[in-house]
Length: 368
Image 1 (tube, rainbow, N blue to C red):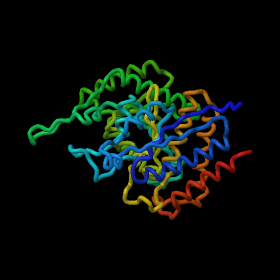
Image 2: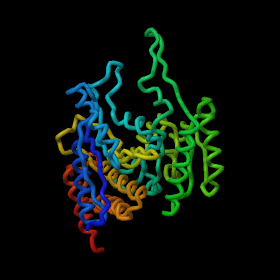
Image 3: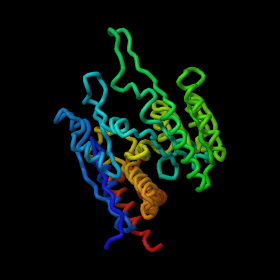
Image 4: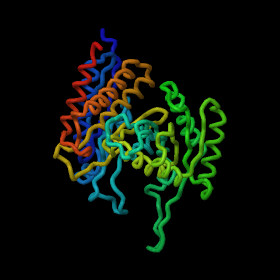
């Protein structure tokens, strides 16, 4: 009788290059479970996104929603196309709907210079960039999605929402992340990013942070205004460990952070709640390069590793944790070797080239 732990994954490849990078991530996952053992993944694909909306008038079917609800984890490619929008001018974005429906309040965006991307800063300390941005994913300014007002073509309003319950959970999550990273010799610090000197909502956000920080005395806490943080991401990004912030601020800062380590092709992400989690590359659907083989699948592959890590911790399956580390190590080794350089790095290696190289590293790791 098999002792493997079985996991059911709802896969939503989405639009544009989402399909291509999802295929790459799935191939790496298959190789990883083949050569690691101890767990088995069943990937069930469903259609969702702007393309689905164009064809059917529905961005995500009831069947796809049920599959997402029943799955052990959800994996996305990329969703949205710039020329397909709702009547109010906003893009079709089921990935946001998933966050709200499943209360995925913690958006996790790892940033690491070890993943092979071009370093944008000449300072040698840039080699040490390795932090995690934790973005609240259900409130803040994004709480106004679909609820904004346009008053007589004279004025438009969106409302910031910060609640104690969600903020407390978010900050507890951030301190737990720092504690987990401390075991790997990180700096043991959580940095709050806000604009509490201007907005009462942000002052409340900081108040709750201070309360949670007080219950985590083993972790250092600092507070930085959003404008100063944007500067410090350029001036001293190697000093950050875990950064926690509101939804819109996090949306902007995560792209800035990705630029420090090579761009969006190197930006994995997860949106995590108490019961469910979604994993996806942070980049968009890039319709201009669809079918060209130029899409960088690194972010998708690393998001798959994040999924295995989450499954492993949630279900106590050490083989999933080992498999996540195996993927991370394989990606780092591929870029360290220097033989694979994707188009966004100025090279000519295709989506398949990088995928195959990572799989070969996974195979070669066995027995070491």
